[in-house]
Image (cartoon, rainbow, N blue to C red):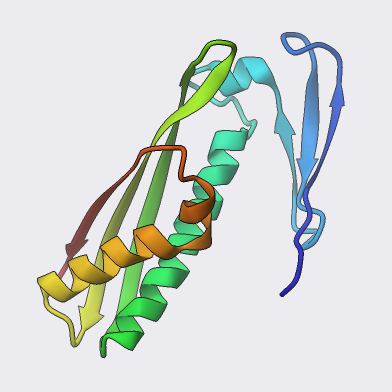
Length: 145
């Protein structure tokens, strides 16, 4: 399996500095990062490690859930997955305080119970969830008609 790479170039102090995080493997984008924007309610056009983790987690979970639904005899029409990653104080510094995964799905061939079982298993088995076992992950999953 491949290794993927991202790179960050940082200049200055934590409070006054900033940087750029580059999605190196894909070459798709470079994003601004700064601690003041990371800690603010309004991201002000910059990304953060938490947003990047949310992107990784939502996409990983969607892939895993799609696979598990297929293994259960269902067919995915649409999955809408959101990951909310929270940052809070720790001693010293900060920590991830929780992740909420929200998924709404249109699926043929599975009832609500089957969908819930697949979603719980995806939460447990997607590689990003496994990597984040030190963070409480909650799941809100529902089928939509």
